[in-house]
Amino acid sequence: MDWKNKVVLITGSSIGIGRELAAQLLDKGACVVLNARNASRLSQTLQAFQEQGYQGIAAVPGDVSNPADCARLVEAAQQHFGRLDVVVNNAGISAEGDVGELSPEVFRKVTEVNYLGSVYVTQQSLPHLRESRGTVFFVSSIAAFRGIPGHAVYSASKVALKTLSEALRVEEEQHGVHVGIAFVGFTENDPQKAIYDKDGVLIPQPSRDFVKQEPVGVVAARIIRMIERREARRIFTLLGKLNGFANRFMPVVAGRILRRSYHQRKEMG
Image 1: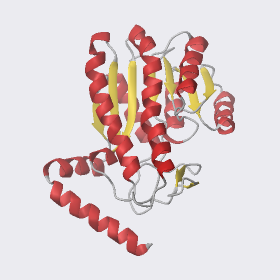
Image 2: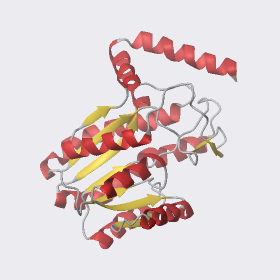
Image 3: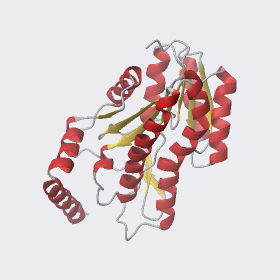
C-alpha cells in the first residue's frame, strides 16, 4: 500500500497509540487529521509534528461522544484534504471499580466515548470511505474476550466494538470498504493517560508494572500493517492470544485465573 497522499483520520491522537500511529503514517507520506477532546494538548501535538517538518497534517478538537462534534470532525477532514481514505477509531477511556460501586455517570461516559464515539465517527465517515474504498478500523482490547473484574464497563465497551465491526464488515462488503479490528494487549502507558475512578473523577492511569507491556511503537506498526493488508482482525501479544484461546476452549480455567487475580488485588488494596 502506498500511503503517499492518503488521508487518515485518527481519533484520540494527541497521546499514546493514536499519536504514535500519526507519527508513523506521516513518515510514510500520509496526510493525517489529529483529534482529541483536550484542545490544548492537541495543539501541542500538532505543533510538535510541524516542528519536525511534517506538512500534511491538521488537528480538529472535538469530543467523539458528541455526534455534532463527530460530524464537524469528518467535515473538516474532507474540507482540508478533499478526501478520506482511513478512519482509525482509537479514542478511549477506562475506569476502575466494581460494578456495585461505580457511579452511573461512569458507565455513561465510558460507553459514550469507547463505543458510541466509534459509531458516530464511523457513520459520518462511511460515505467518504465508500468513495475511496477505504478502511474503518477499531482499536479494541483483549478485555473484549472476557469481562475483567474491576474493569467491567471498559470490557463491555470493547466487546461492543467487536460485534459492531463484525456486523459492519458484512454490510460494507458491497461498497468495498475494509473493516478491521485489533485486540490490543497491555501497552506502555503514556504519562498523560488518565482514567475514571468510581465517582467519575479523572485520575492518573495506575502503574501496570506487574505485567509485561508492549512498546507503543510496536502496537502502532502492527495496526498499520493490518490496514495495509486489509486484515479483518488480529489479537496482539502472546498474553492476548493465550487469553483468547483460554476463554474459547478452557473457559472454566480462565474464570478461575481471573477470580484469583481479582481477589489478590483486593487483598493488596
